[in-house]
Image (cartoon, rainbow, N blue to C red; front, side, top):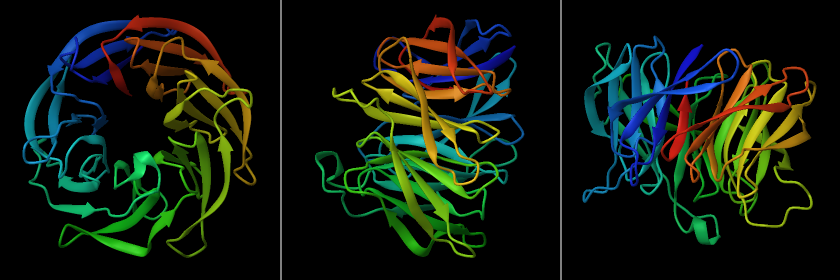
Length: 345
């Protein structure tokens, strides 16, 4: 039995963050609301598991959103602190083992830096990396930071910007607590890609970037003794005969690095890829219908036996049993959830 948290949009019935149970047989159970919060669209946990962080995906009159920190206490989340995310509509949050916090602010087109303290409080905003430029399509008239990541390879920071159609590379000056650009500072993706999220291969220096607008996954390889990455290939996430509108949302990789999964909003499926362990190349294994509309975020259970999908528009979460040998998914259960957009174990 695993408990997990669900971040939501709160314009309709949802009131904030909810707690659920994934049972041993794949059945899902809602425990209930654990924290009232305004548009907690993405969640993250501290390394010790004592604190949960959530973005408030809002745009105030001062053009900022917020980060909230909660103490995890039995079946409750106790609000500790709330600080600026550094820009409007924060849609992603990440933190490392040292408690450094990254926020991706979509409308702000930037990435914020904060520090989670040992007592669960948050520092003031320490720095902001402002992006600039555009990607040439209607959705890319200006910067739209969509996610921010700590690289496990060298500690670099990678900010994924859909609007500028590029990845932004930096590091943190640990004395001044500011972002410093790496060389090269950016990597441009193929025109119209619209990069959104990424995953790191667990044993090789391969990165897989999911592109919302082109419905592709781009494989990157880190160059030897360098901070630079090379684009190797891109693989479509949709069946060849599918022609209706669709937009990728999230990407996950199995703990053994053998399979990559991507959610398709429109086709309403999880695309399943096998990873060539010598080259990192992706091969399509299949597509599993998500049994709901607009699959946003999804997550693998801690033991890798199940994959859970948040279907935003049909207000449900669906669990699938995962075959670790083939990567394929088998339907297990469905549970109601109000406008779910993030699943966090």
